[in-house]
Length: 554
Image (cartoon, rainbow, N blue to C red; front, top):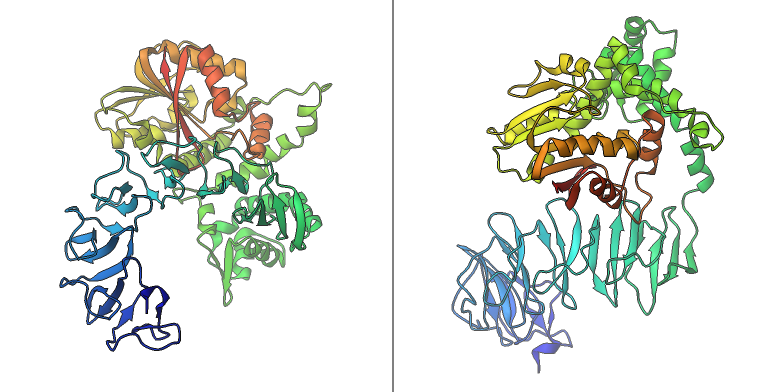
């Protein structure tokens, strides 16, 4: 009788033959399946080892955990860490890891004690010099790896990139296609990392003989071909497109409700009963109840007995929260809503519309200036945490943060690189607001469109260029180039428009209406940089909305 036909018993304490009978007399706390060369992992009394088909130990050693043999090697957990052993229980190599997978195509995924992942050879050596945030098993000579920015790509057996395209999530290739997810949803990509079709889905299965089962974004199930064409519908939509579109049409309800809660002081009045909110905020009878119920529907408040309290999400609307969005709520419900009403005129060819002077308007309004810049400060605190490491500075550079607002990023740089010399170039009224709010940051009043009068090793432009059209961007970049010697670095921190996705379209329209600016792709930035005397070096994606475009002064 061959071990190939053995199965794990229903109680998982031994193995049984094809008729359900035990194949040996021993009993264990746990057994796993037999694998070539005819050995199975077992556990008993807190110890683990492998057995032969007769139930007897394959070797004398004992471990904390043992796993199946793959390509003649089995992963085990010993007192000094994870590693692999041969069929006779001998260590395959001397190294120890924090975790080991199973060998596939002479490669095995492991995690080092530092937390990094990589693939090793059967000798326990790194298959390539890189380290990753996570790696998966190889299939057909390719594996998925995840970088520290949260995005994933494919690598070959030697660790080189297969196509250099990065995705929010990714699977191994199966019959020439891999499941991949971008900001818009799931799809299939080919060996070049190119989408096989333009559609996006909530979920996709691998192709099977040229067809794949997918779930549409509206919940419908269908079968598509390799061009994304629907062949069979398996389930109708679970979500009405009519209702969904109607919900989008009344999106301003949410904006105005939150803005009203801030303006009326309701957020700061909580926790409180409805009657207390009415009295403190001077609301009409039943006004507090109606507004609080709407805020509850938005997940911002919750009722406990007769008391209404802010949820964790709602706490972000408190003015004393370090990431307060209270000012953003007032901006979006007020001035920005008014700007958006001019969208048809902004897009119409025959219109005389021109972009507003939002920075001048803010500078002339003392009350709005404070709130507007506190809003920008909140977004900076939320989005810039990963930027400093991505800059990869030596630590002693002269850094100019041009248009650096209240200095959030500048302070983060100094905290990360204490020996750096960081100067924020900003409008005079912003410098007046911020000069005492940071430690060690130097401040210089000036305009981005006039000579800066400063020399630097590094120039930062963080969420600055998206406020301007191309001609103005080139002007700013030329002043940045003048501040740098050849070989100096320019870092542009922006949300990048994907080349093959519609993500960021609404943000792009908002910039048009608010400043006359636009969101851009990496390719568009490359052209603008070249026009101003820079060469694009690389794009460093972050686990945040923004990316870092790194360029070198020519």
